[in-house]
Amino acid sequence: MSLHGKRKEIYKYEAPWTVYAMNWSVRPDKRFRLALGSFVEEYNNKVQLVGLEEESSEFVCRNTFDHPYPTTKIMWIPDTKGVYPDLLATSGDYLRIWRVNDTETRLECLLNNNKNSDFCAPLTSFDWNEVDPNLLGTSSIDTTCTIWGLETGQVLGRVNLVSGHVKTQLIAHDKEVYDIAFSRAGGGRDMFASVGADGSVRMFDLRHLEHSTIIYEDPQHHPLLRLCWNKQDPNYLATMAMDGMEVVILDVRVPCTPVARLNNHRACVNGIAWAPHSSCHICTAADDHQALIWDIQQMPRAIEDPILAYTAEGEINNVQWASTQPDWIAICYNNCLEILRV
Image 1 (cartoon, helix red, strand yellow):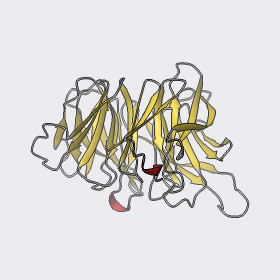
Image 2 (tube, one colour):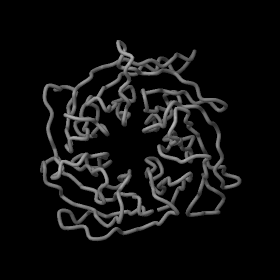
Image 3 (cartoon, one colour):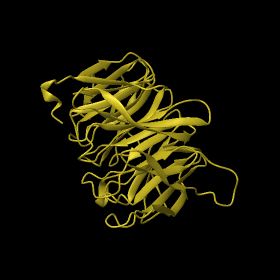
């Protein structure tokens, strides 16, 4: 997208509700497209698909659809070549896969692991495997992680419905699991990590699920809310504790000892995003209205200050670094989405 030489540094979109979940599309033909999830404390919630109009340089809403409960996470299929159907996944009460068309978004399948019970264990997060987009992993408050297999059928010819099945479900933690993320190590398909209310980061291998490795435990046993793998160096990951003002960088080769602590925020951190194109840059965002970009090359020497700081007009709920457009970071606060050129 040329944007006709009007190289604005910031584009803003205002949604009709508080924005919480958010994700960049990775398809090469849909560059400035994002999905946004509402945070309304009731059953009826929404997802909007927004795109930047090249002519006007304004965000427009292309599509809105209903979603039960707020989405805890939204992700576009990690399909950088555009060979799979244009799919979007959301987590909330269940994992849902949606097919996006120009005019409408249709629910393709609802993946429910509790077939024999009326009880629903809400999903806190999920991840979509980049190496094999037919694999997704979900994390739940019922202490488990579930790995799902997706069948997207033939892409050419008639449109096949997408369906899914449970590949494996495992008890991952002693308490609620809050996040899950596949690692790029070892081929990028079989390794994943999770964090949870027990304050630990645990690593799993789909080929050897009989045991897991504890990479880190919070010294005060505070719940860990998010984890995020370095996109270029699979040895590093970042995590943060509930109500914590710092982000902890871990090296899986040195378990249980953080290699760095990023602690310039003045209020609790809500989001972490590694640079897609560099192993030593990471963005953190917090309730202090700040999005900070850090250069961590000096590790294990202390990282004193960020190299870039942006102050938003509200508490930043989420941050996403565009994997196919590394010049752009998206943040959301209140009812606003902003994309920032870095």
